[in-house]
Image (cartoon, rainbow, N blue to C red):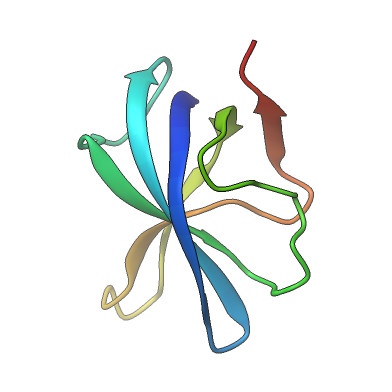
Amino acid sequence: VFHGRILAWHLVGQETRYEVEVKTPYRHRFPLVSREYLWVPNTCGCPPLQEGSEYLLMAQRHVNHEHTLNRILLQDNGYARPWT
């Protein structure tokens, strides 16, 4: 769980990649740096994240079986709420 600001987004194949500035990590089982890529496994804009806005995000670390892919994944039904 962390507070982050969306800096940019790009469509990469069938996924959306967000560049996020990590403001405050709250509860994490893996280390976060000040800027991270957040991946969403769709291109429909679910959950709706707007560039320049801040959110409270609950994401998970995704590592494939071959250990060649290590990234932060936000499921399309994941927790992403505007920061207030």
